[in-house]
Image 1 (cartoon, rainbow, N blue to C red):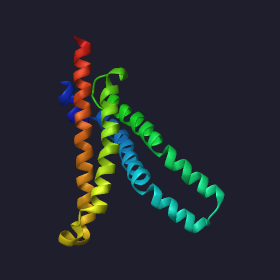
Image 2: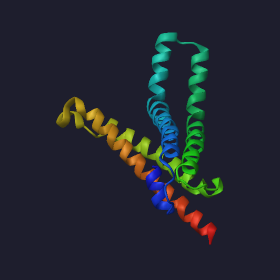
Image 3: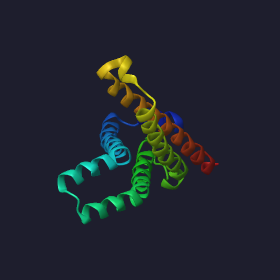
Length: 169
């Protein structure tokens, strides 16, 4: 991500130690986002069904589940937007004003949520990769999902870079 952002913004790379530290921070953010995106929108209702079976039918569990249905997408969108915006600001080896990353962060946030929902729907309803690939199909599906999200991420970065260049002119 750092190399691609430097290429897109036409920035010369900095020293290796600062880039490594930045890469570690961005890796933690990205892994957290993927886990969050994978767990909450895709498996959120399934997780609550398991909790219902364990805890039993109670009013507290039902209230929390109803709140999750209502607040799931606003919370997901807000958390994704904030973290993606942070990654867009710290990725290049040059200081980028945070206000130039809004359009790309919005595009990437909406794109990630839509891509995850469409991809989950496709995998549940149509795809039968396990017939051809067997048990390794889960890894292939996960890699395809990550590839799709990374493509959307780079497109959002290009949107940000065009705004940044326009602001400099």
